[in-house]
Length: 149
Image (cartoon, rainbow, N blue to C red; front, side, top):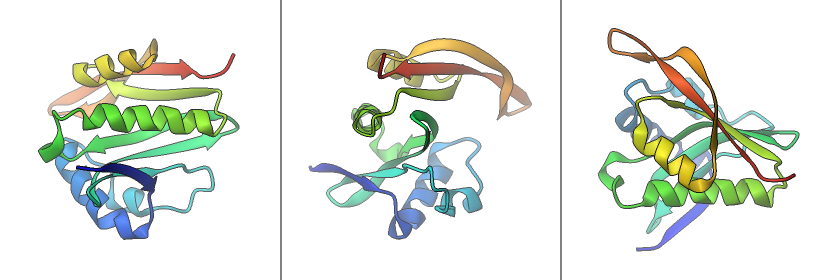
């Protein structure tokens, strides 16, 4: 099975939207998924034998990259594809001469936090009551990774 990555384009959007609804308890609005008009965007898809199985949405503003959304299709989770996607994301940021990467992750998403730590991210702070959950809200862990000194 061949894993490849390419910039997200209109032809990927229906697959990304399908994964978004399956992978997140509170998915982005369809309008947000389909909005490819931001000049700072650096969104990519992960393909497995040509099929979209994951993606990330990110912005690079003057060397500071914000990871906005990342997901792997639930049917492909547990196969290290999430790690490959996140690793590609970091390498891509480095190739674009980014200085730092920032992200927020649900405090209950232990697997993602562990993955980000493994890639070199550090906890910076928390954003109280950031994410919606059934019956309330949950904190976000703010994480960063510095690529350049």
